[in-house]
Image (spheres, rainbow, N blue to C red):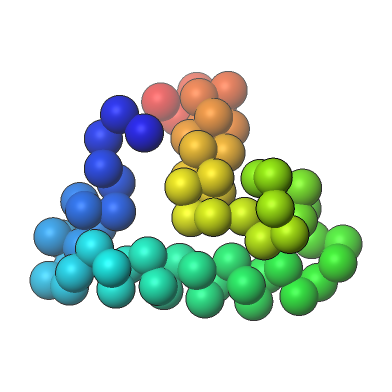
Length: 67
C-alpha cells in the first residue's frame, strides 16, 4: 500500500498500529466463519491478511465514483 492506512487509523484513534491490525484480524476471522461470505475469496490463504483485505477494498473503491 502506498500509504500506511493502519498507522493512520492508529494515530487517529490513539492506539498502536499493532492494536489496529489485531482488531482487523479478529474481524476478518469472524467474517470467514461463514463459508459463503465473499471475504473468503480474498487473498491467497485460508484467511486473508489485513493487507489483502485493504488492497481489495481500495481496489473496489477505485471502481466507483467515491475516489
